[in-house]
Image 1: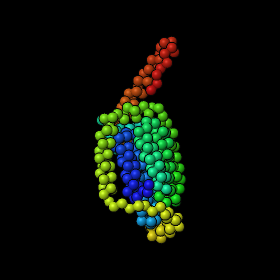
Image 2: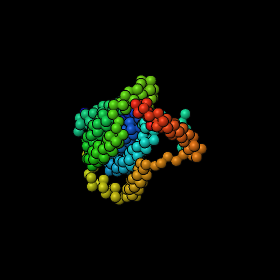
Image 3: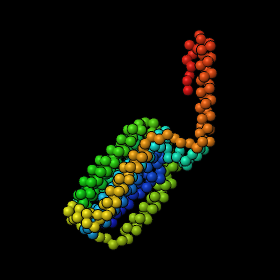
Image 4: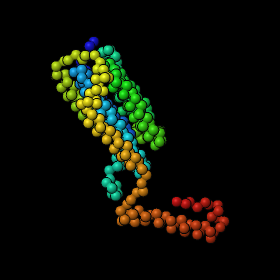
Length: 105
Length: 207
């Protein structure tokens, strides 16, 4: 049962769609961050598959950059989660709808 | 190799499905580890061993540890799971899921219309990857270094504890109930000192 490049790209698309569903349906900020990680990972898989289809290393290099970006993103995002939990005592994304100095109502 | 790819992709899809449906954050994180390991297996079967190792070290190692650290620091346990159970009603997730499913089917149909090309499982050696990384993409590597530096500084700046600075009108508004509470406690303390015996039986509630 040989596999071709479409199969890999379909797996990447399914994983990306699962991550998108997670972002859209969850209300907890930590779950949203996890789903964003899943989406980034799926995009990296598509890059690597495209690189391997031509036998070139460029896809893997793009995956390295996606990895660096994900690391920076998750560190800043978790700092924001800590601040939000400190201010609102909750991780509900619906509570954070007010601008600065605006009383939420 | 193809068999390995199929098994690993099925494991990855199932564990990712479990990640986005769990109520407890720590269970979701453990399934996420499984998903990343399966993804590393996919990379290995595609012939990219360097990326597979990086996936395990960086995703399943560093990023998961950061997330678990935050989950433990915020003490997200049974209460969070209960809250998630209340939030995740079918009327919340059915609509977005159907729309995403429509987009996914479109994408899959589009992918199937392209010509079929068998994947070659000849691995690209790490030497080629590193030579390309430091020859053609050296500027991008430096920019990634800038990005990581900005990420460190940004995280340190954001997670610093700050006093909340309100506008002066809002400050007075926020101080109003506090002053009232202070006055109330003062009055109660006065009463308790005047009427000695009943106050000793009833402890004064201090706000």
